[in-house]
Each structure stands twice: as C-alpha cells, then as structure tokens.
Length: 246
Length: 246
DNA sequence: CTAATAGTGTCTGTTAGACAATATCTG
DNA sequence: CAGATATTGTCTAACAGACACTATTAG
Image (tube, rainbow over all chains, first blue to last red; front, side, top):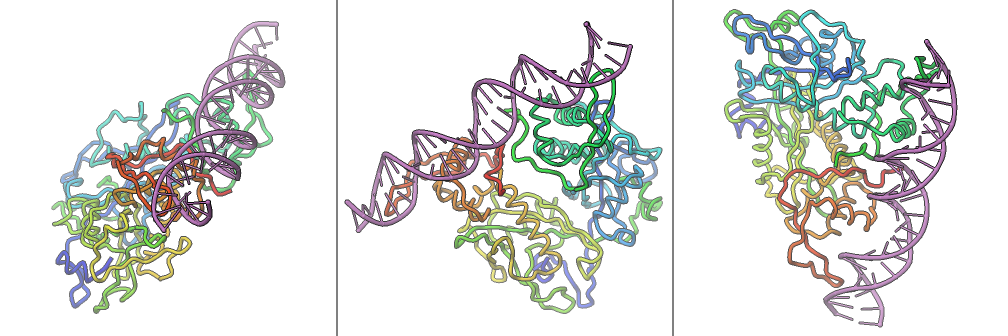
C-alpha cells in the first residue's frame, strides 16, 4: 500500500483534503460450512431473496453478506457473526479459504468476497428457516449456485479433501465423544475411499490429539472406546499423507 | 451473499432504486515478493511516501495498492499488475496468501487487503528506484513495516517454509538452468537447515519436475549436470515432508 | 598428485499396507 | 453358541536418514 504510487499509477489517491474520492468495490464475506450427516458430506446453503433488484433471485447461495463497518471489528469477526446468525453455533474450526474479486461476479458492481471455511459437528446446527443442508455427491453439488459460489464451494471441497489427507481436521466434524471407528468413517466419507483400519488407528493415536474418556459405546458387538478431542484447538499435521491415490 | 438477510441484519442493503447506499471498506492488494540472493531469502519492499495525509510516512511497506475498478478485471490481475509495475517481471509463481481486513489497520478507515505471494528468480528483477530487496534473517525482518504488513510478511514466510517442506516451490526461485546442488542450497536457505544430499536428489528426481539439459556446469571440481524446470507450471506435492524438525 | 564438489551405494529404522488373529459384547 | 464389530499383531515393501564411498574436473 503506497499512496503516492497509487495516485501516480491509477489516478486514484489522496486529495489535499485527505479524501479518498474514487469508486470502491463492494466487500462481502461468505462462509462455507461443512458438516457430516447421513453418511454424506453436507454444506449449508441459503436461498437468495426474490425482491426487486436482487441478483440471482431464489438461487441457492453460501451464507454471507456485506461487511458492516460499524459492526464488524475485522473479517474473522464478520465471518463468525454470519456463521452464528445462520446456524446458532460458534464453529470449533474457522479458517480463511481465500478471496474472490472481479468486475463481473456481482451484477451490482465490482465486488470482492472474503471466503471462510467452517467445520461443525452434525447435531450442533439450529437452522434458520431459509437455510438448509445440501449433500455433496462425489465431490460435487447438484444445484447451481448464485454468483461464483460454485467456484468457491469447489475450492473449499478441494481444500478440505487435501487437508484431510494429512491433518486432523475431521476431528472438528465429530460430536464431543466419539469412537475411533466413528472417526475413521468420517475420514472415509470426506476422502470417498476406504482406509486401512490398523494404519488409521496407529496414526491417530500416535498424533496425541484425542484422549479416552471412561466410557464405552455399547452395541450388539464388542464395545468401542469413547474418546474426546484434547483441548488444543489447533489441527495436527501428519508427516505423511494417507495412502495417496497414486 | 443474501441481500435480504443483509438488509435485515445490518440495516444495509438495496433501496428501491437498487442503490447500495452504505459505507464500503477500502479495497487493496499487496504482494509479498520473495527471491534469493547472496545466500539469503529476500523480500521486495517499497518506502511509503511522506506527503500530507499519508499514513506511515517513510516506513517500508509491501508493494501494493488500491484495486482500480476501471483497470483491474479481477484480484489476480491487480496483483500481477502491481508485481509488474514494481519489478518489471511477470512472476512464474503467484498464489493468494489470504486477506486482512479490519477497522484499525489503516488510519484512513475500514480497509481490507488481498495479499498475494510471488516467487521470482534472483536476476529477474529490474527495480523501480523506490523499491529494494531486504534480507530476512532467521525468519524475521529487521525493519518495522507500515500497516499490518509485518503480520502479512510473517504469514508469507511461514507459508513459504511450510510448503517448501513438501512441495517443489523453490524451483520458482531458480534461474532457467540450475544444478541439483543449486536447488538443494535454495531449499536449505529457505528452511534454514541442512538437508541430506542423497535423499534430496532421489526425491527431486523421482518427482519428475525437472529435466536435464545437454550441458554441465564446470568449475574447479567435478562438473554438475544442468537441469531446467519441466513446462508444467504447477508445483509438485510430495507425499512426505522433509526430515521434519524433531 | 591434491582439493573440491558431484553423484552413488549401503545399511538401518520407521511406518503404511495388507490381512490375519483375537477380544468382547448381544441375543 | 453365532454374529458383529473392536482391537491387536505380523509380515512386507517403500523410503528417509546417516554416512561412506566413488567420480570427475582444475590446477
């Protein structure tokens, strides 16, 4: 950011008065919220309104909105606010995904959105009426989305899959207490391929990210040890990927 | 992006006229440009102007500037433009680093910057007079930077180091032709630790990212095979990290 | 020849992958 | 007991780490 350069290069800059008198892009934040339910990866979407002048009426879109310069201290706070408003939860995991900005992505003018990426446990969601979970089949969503939200979602899915290969991210999709086979199932759903049971267990246990609780899950078979996440909220990075598909 | 929601939630939105009449944050793009020279990792910085109303006068800052809604088709084009203007090169590698936005990072008002991350070969730079390369000692820069550019730079250094552990990114820091020991030296400079020669060679060669040219580098010792990058502009991802520290 | 750096080979430890074996519950 | 799933063990292949060894130039 170099004010003088900017003024020289683009004809924009500070006047004598300190007034920044050139057009500004619209600034928004959107959140890609993933969860697992029904053995599917799901993403939370909202329907666009149909009012006059609204772009992409009635299409599905990522939850998000304009940055409110009075209300939002920073971008992460804005994303957390959107997430809270749409789902009623504060996500155990919220990371920045990237930003998308161009002259053409919003018919109302040059706009840039800051996209975030959240993982929440299945049962944590208390939805507003216009929001709903949409399943992702084979890494793709069936529905067409508003704006460039299809691109943003595709990027989020790719990021999630990539990171699941070598991090503990899926732990944030789990309820408070879960078994190792539960966790493995979630890894397999996200990666869409089976994993080796014993290698999986060795890896997760040696990562020191979960701890057993003094309970077992019972069923019509051998009971399974229940675990919970250790307090550290940071994801764990493994030094190798899972069985990489060639 | 849901216009109705936004209007309800924040008092912002479309009027009957379709007019978006609420305050917009400033939108900028900044570029963290790395290169290697003198056995050091270097970052390209510019000095802030001293004019009236200019924030952080005379401090060093990342090259960047306001998005020009007339000139810039999208954010990446804006970043490429800034890079070109500052160094005269088009980077062989330009990726998005993230975005930083808050009420307080720029004294002129709520602002959000989209940060990019570029790697260029040492000799490719044709600098403008107010730009200069600053060495990074032990992962840190000596100088204090304008705005939150210190944070952005720290994040870029961390991202670079992380990725160098398991990708071919340093290849973009190399001149057109280079030897394997050259490449290893660059890895070692970025990681700030020595690597095993034979493991390094095996890994790079089996990654199928470089190809030999019909020349050798000669010196007062055994000649070294010269290589060049294969055409694919995408970085290669290894399935393991290098000898991870502890 | 020596000095210097390029490049290869050998051994060892770790761990993923495959898959077999055993454990512990319900009914 | 049978059925089902959890958990552990065994064997092998791949590969990084350490480090020794060989190769090829200039002078």
